[in-house]
Length: 408
Image (tube, rainbow, N blue to C red; front, side, top):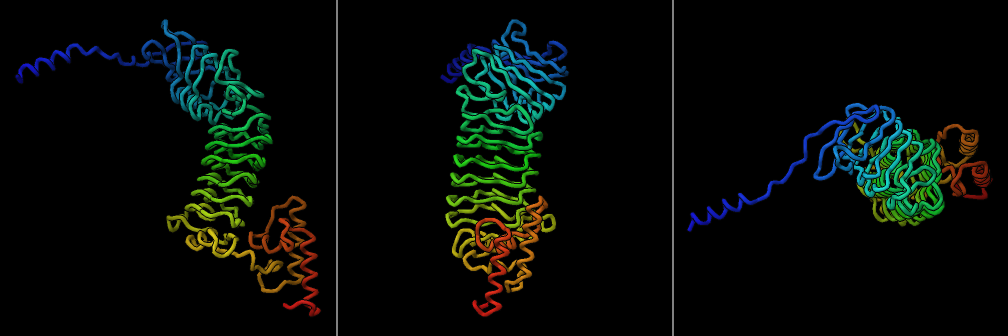
């Protein structure tokens, strides 16, 4: 009986058809480039390059087989390519396929491309325009930028350093501007609703971002490592700032939190060293690990609070609990001595003079010198700005105290 079972198994092994394996990588010359490819069944896959000229035209057919795919990272770090043409036979462009092609200016995407992987064009900081085949049903172009077929989602940016996202775009896709160090400014359309994961991450020269009131969601790390970003104006429609959203924005000195926000994710503002403090609305119920006010301390080799960093909020709030657990200074903004910017316990002419000096500096374009606490206390009328009105209010209060009209 055992011999019969062994014989049957042997016969079964003999009749299993052989499975063809992908062929080893081969080379093909086209224009001034040498590309590598493999055969995958009945089609060819571009896997890389050995040398590439300024003009790269990927052939539609290699050895009688249609070229249907550009594999992940195939042209990564190719600095020679300036113009790229993708054939009409191509169906898929893999992840990071053209990552860091820093001199690439124009790309033609053929009629059959239906799938483009994440970060396919990240770091292509010289991109001026995309062109899509007229029969392509998956993608379109708006103002030279690659979009979905309906023109409502921006997939990859191409254009000037001062970017203007076209009207009609309601979503900026994952990594759409990723690692584009040429970008200095971005104008966003009024109807924008969402910004995807890592959409602007690594835009090293982006200085300010103002989100339209229609924006309801931000993705993980959407502005992470924008090291020149100085100011972020958040949308009143946001309910949360997600994980790592502004992490490592080392120049960020000002951020507002809209009144309807309910949560700050893990590392949302991690290692934002220029941010000396912020007001946390009472609507915020959860604050994630190292969300704000902390960094990696090289001496202790662990996360620690920035010296002089404060959060303001109300007693019993999530903000107070977060400050206690992270050894961060906390201010109850319902119990502050407004006007006392030098912290000597009195509100007087010296404070008014300091407020006027700060107002004059900011009004003439100089860098603010007040800490977060000074800014909070100097805004005597709590209108969100420090100006001559606040100084006048401080002087009026001081005069009233000095004449006995008000108690100290």
